Amino acid sequence: MGISYITVYTYLLLVLSLFLLATSQDALNEDVIDEKKFCEQPDDLDFERCKPENLQIPALKTICENIGLDAETDVFPFLFEEEDVKEDGALLQKLDREFVHADYVAAAYECISVAEESDHEEAFIQAILEEDPAVLQVIIKEVMESSPGTIEGLIKEFTMEFPDIESELSEGET
Image (cartoon, rainbow, N blue to C red; front, side):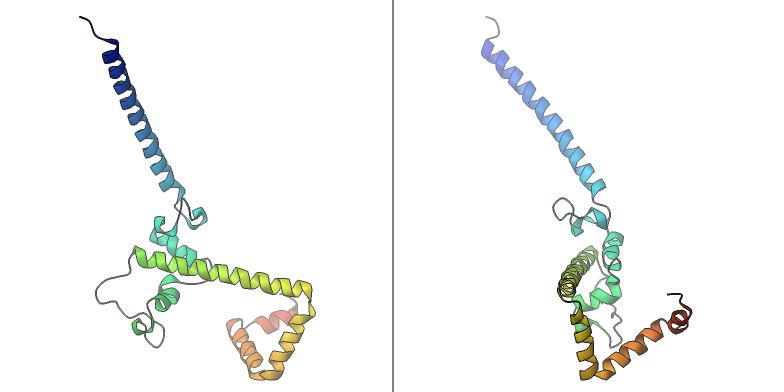
């Protein structure tokens, strides 16, 4: 008796299945490699294939730096509550561990949230100004009338941060 058609057919199905399994595994491995290459910097974030959890610590720090915040000195004190912070805002040394990747991920999400809120506020203000440009003048006038010290404080703070601004303005450099 020879080999039956069913045996040959079963054997061919088995070989084909193993071949498909092997090739699909290679494709999966390539996708994983591509994902790692794809998600290396903050610009790669799409919150589907690339999330902050996928980034390394330097890239997570950059997310905060892009909006003018430092993860360690500006965001961690906020995230880890006031009992972990000195009066001057410096972090107390954590007794049991240093900051880890998960801490930086939390800071990155907080910075992303702040950036989104800022964008919404800016868009809201822009919409108001486009609708009625005089509204900014009214707001400034009301602030000046209700608390003149606020404007003086802002001017003082501005001149401390930019000490040469007065001479630059008078010379027409700015």
